[in-house]
Image (cartoon, rainbow, N blue to C red):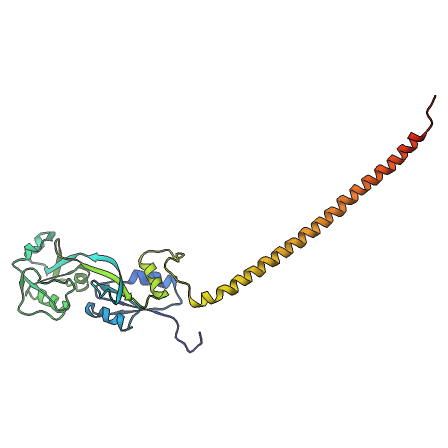
Length: 274
């Protein structure tokens, strides 16, 4: 990479209510040389941002267009009803959809629960955003059903919330374009799935690695051959040393034996006594 080129990076989009902090921290620990940039996008625009190339991957709300986007479901959020602190519903720890039948239930245009028709009575107009709907709840106009993370995101001191036991939940997923499953995307998949830093599951060797492989193998073969030659030389030197010492000793022993034998032969040559 030349000095004029931008450093490698990873762009992550996320929708309101989702908190990627933990995964970003792990990314920065594992890949300190690869900056991760965050961009918040409205839930309804997340898929379009990914397909337009504005981000490499995104933490989005389901459903997504599976013909164009890959998605790994991560979790499903509990749905709560946002109400004023003095509302009668606060008397219970949790409520059902039926308990809200007489309430005006606000249905913002950016709703993420996918209702065909929310419970309760509809308001005269739909608020433009969830933030607008929260303001209307505070004004006593109605109540609002949202994922728990959005209730926390739009927290106000004069409002509270209760779990709605039988309302649909909101699924959150990691998503990316089907034709852009890069190594960086796979790195982030490993992080959200809790893989260890040494895991290589799913990673494909890069082009550079594939090109370098033959050279690395050739270097390994040369190193092995050099080791074998050095080992052979050491064995040869050791054999010669052992052969010279042992052979000399043996020759000397044999020579000494002959000498002794000669003397013995001399003794054998003496005339016998009568």
